[in-house]
Amino acid sequence: MRLVIARCSVDYAGRLSAHLPSATRLILVKADGSVSIHADDRAYKPLNWMSPPCALKEADGVWTVENKAGEKLIITLEEVLHDSSHELGVDPGLIKDGVEAHLQELLADRMEVLGAGWSLIRREYPTAIGPVDILCRDSDGATVAVEIKRRGEIDGVEQLTRYLELLNRDPLLAPVKGVFAAQEIKPQARVLATDRGIGCVVLDYDELRGIDDDKLKLF
Image 1 (cartoon, rainbow, N blue to C red):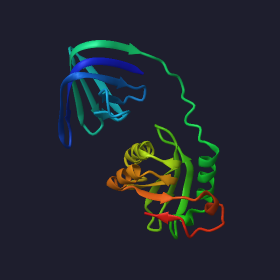
Image 2: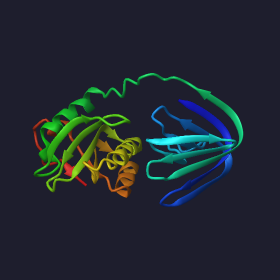
Image 3: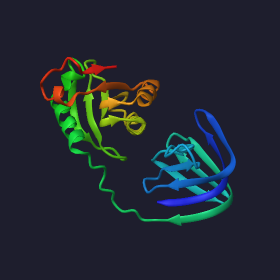
C-alpha cells in the first residue's frame, strides 16, 4: 500500500463531473489498483475514489487514474508532504464471532425466512474485497447479496454497499440487490440502508433456530 499526504486538487471526469478544491489530503494506492482520496474527517469513507481495475499514470505534478469505462480521476499535486509504500501481505480476513457465523449458517439453511421461493447460491461468496456472507436468489430470480451482523450499524451498510458495487459489475449476476440482516439494526443504519435501496431484516437468534419464525420481519 502506498500512502501519500499532499496538498492537491482532484477532478473526476466520467458520467458526472466533480471537483475537490486544493487542500491537504491523504491518497491511498492499494495493491488491488484502487485509488482513494481522504480528508481528516468522515471516518473511513473517501472523498473520491476509483475502484479496481484501473490504471495510474504519474506525470509532473499530475496523476491520472483511469478505469476500463474511461472514467478518470485527475489528481493535481501541489506539494507532497509524505510518500511511503508498505507491504501488508495477505490479509487473513475478518473472523466473525460465533453468533454471526451461526446466524449465517442458519439463514443459509432456511432461506424461506427471507421470502417464499428464495434460494441459496453460495455462502461466503468470494469477491476481490472479501466474501459476501450469503449470495442468493429471490422468488423472481434476481440475485441478492446478504450481509449478516450481530449488531447492524452504519459500517455494515457501507460494507454491503461496497460488495454491491463490485457484484453489479458482473454481467452474470447483475442486477444485484442487497439485504442487511442483523439481530439489532441501529436507526441510522436503517436510514442509510433504505436510502441506498437495501432491505433490512431483523433476526432473532432463537427464533431462527426453529422456535418461531413469525417475528422475522423484512423491511
